[in-house]
Image (cartoon, rainbow, N blue to C red; front, top):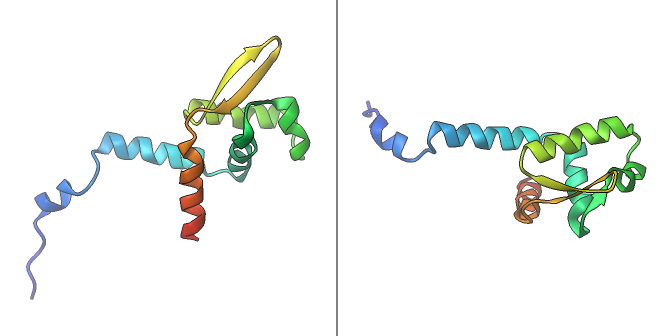
Length: 105
C-alpha cells in the first residue's frame, strides 16, 4: 500500500482559484467557432462589422454579440470611427494561443 501524496505539495503546483476562474472565463470566451474565426479575420488589422459580415451567414446583430463577448473577454478592443466601431486584437499573443491549441489536436 502506498502513502497518500501530501496535499500541501499539490496545492503549491496549481494556480490560485481567482486565476483559475479568469482562465476558465477566457476559455469560455474562445469556445465559439464564430469567435475564433472573428479573431483570425482580425489578424491583418482592424475591421468593422460591415467588413466581417460577408464572411458569415449570420445577422449583423449576431456578429455584434460575438464581438462584444470578445471585447468583454479582453481579447478584442474597439474604437469608434464616425458611426462605425472598428475592432482589433488587443494582444497579438492570442494567435500563438490559438496555434498552440491547434497543434494539440
